[in-house]
Structure formats: C-alpha cells, structure tokens
Length: 325
Image (cartoon, rainbow, N blue to C red):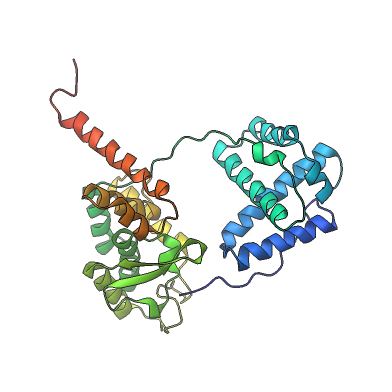
C-alpha cells in the first residue's frame, strides 16, 4: 500500500506572519504530515485557509501578524473575519471549512504551549444544511456498469476499458473512495476474498471483495500492457504512471451524459450507492460504518436519510392515495 511521501517544508514567504509565527506554522505542517498523516491536498487546504485568515488579520490590525496578536484577538475580531467572508459572497460551506482550519491551528498552538486564545472557542460558525449523499438507483447503477463494460467509443483500447471497469467496480462493490482505489498497489490484490484498505488518517480497514470485482481486477491485470511490479500501482495511465483520479472522473462524466444519468453521478457517488443499497437490503449500520471507514457513526447515519427519501419518492409515485386532486 502506497504511503504519503514526505513533504518539503512549506514556502511561507508570502504568509503575513513574523518569524515566530512562521516557525509555528512550519511545526504545525510537520505535525499534520507526520502525526496526523493528512494527505497532501488536505495539508495544502489547511495552509491556504490559514494564510487567507492571516491576510485578513494583517489588514484588520494594520501590522504583520505575530503570536502576541493571535493571543490578544477578541470575539469581535473573529466575527469581523466571518462578516468579511459573508460580505464577499463566500459559500457557507467554504467559511465553515476555513473556520475549522483556523480552530485546528489555534488548538495546536494551545496544546504545544505556544499561544492561547479562549475567544475562538466561543465562536459559532455558519449554520449548514445537512447534506444528503447522492446515490444511484439500482437500474441506474446497472446501466452505468454495463456501459463501462461495453463502451460506445470508437478506438477505445480494450485494456483501458478493463482498467476502468475494475476501478468502478471497486468503488461500488467495496465502497472505496477513489483515492483509496487508486492508491492500491499490485501486491494488494486480494487472494482470500478480502482487501485491506488504508483510508483517511492512515487507518486500515478490511473489506470483503465480491467475485465479480475480483474477476474485473484479474481481467485488468491480464490485459494491461504495462509491467506492474508488486510494489508499484495496480492501476496505471497510458504512460504507465499511477492512474490520475481525473481520468476516472472524466470517464464517469462521459457515461453520465451518454446515459442521461443525474448530474450528481460521479465516482464518489458509487461509494454512496454502495452504502445506500446495503442499507436498503437490511444491512447493519455499524457494519456499514466499518466497511466505509467512517470514524463517526453520525456520518454513516446520513444514509438513512437517503433511504427514507427514496421510500417517500416510491410512495408518492406509486400509492393511489398519495396524489390528491
């Protein structure tokens, strides 16, 4: 299983922070990578959010931001930042994520004894609507999987079709995130009916692998023209490097248009579909939580909303008393 490579120290030269704060930022970066084992994209997002917050503070207080300035911030200072984002039209989800990044940095400063600020603990973020995952129906899923096995694209290489079919079956058949599927190495191919996956935070979990999924992986291995060493990627692009998620996303997008599927049909929607279909078939919520690698059961419970919404839709369309007038 591929592990995140060590990152070079971040370039903090453009961050409006004095030397002591910049040193603290560098330490936070190291902690995120070495202890929390956050992904490259996650670390970059945290640093972008915090840099934007510090840029606001620089203009707000009229000085380069220091640890002393951070410790002296009042609730009104944080509320001014939130108000600025609202006035500039930032989405509430974006502001909530930025606030989470800022809170995480302040918790790090407090935990390390570098700086303490109690005001941020009382700050309330924007109220967010509860997002319900978008899942495909059974027929929609069947159409998508049939389309990937028999694409109507002239000149499509057979091995590429086999590769993409294996990837999508992993997402739907095992409930993997696309990053988890594409980080698999050749040596990770299951031999005993199960697969060990390393998910967010470096947490490993074991998921069962359906015979149809294993057959698709073996078909991919038989047709792939590139050498696939045990310690190398299981899925590769046309040049032999680890497959880029964007390739899979574009493939699903093309099939969505061809089949007239909902706009929310993405590779990640297949993971949602996996969970929703298991729940609809009577699957235990705790077991589904383990299969998905969710740290909190509340995250998995969102799928009960999906199932309920589908039941109501069936009721509204089929029950003779559901429609009035």
